[in-house]
Image (cartoon, rainbow, N blue to C red; front, side, top):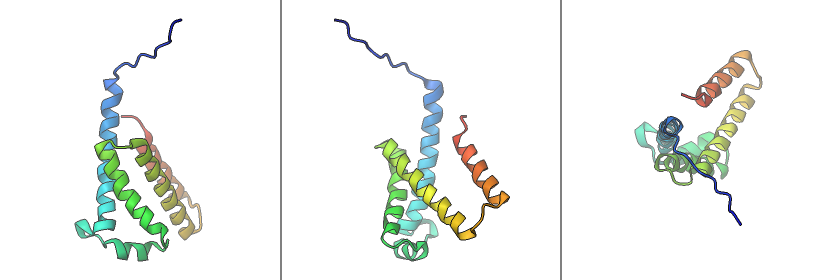
Length: 123
């Protein structure tokens, strides 16, 4: 009986850019989340943010998810879960923004598309 083994090879040419991307995105979301949650960097703080978001109790999950999702990406703790929570939060933010403008104008679509491509392109 032979067992098939999967051999994982180090891929420094892929791992290093992904680490840098993870750290940069984590720092951005943690800083933005700390503005909303803690009032850091001149941010409004939790209560004002919850009132401004108009999401009710869901607003607390958004703020906490943004802060701790960024922190999770920085330290490498549950990175897939952290990234997934941030993706859901950003999809909700885009949907709320599109709902507020009530149109898919060419400027809005091109702005969202260019930002998405800029974040997804490899180094």
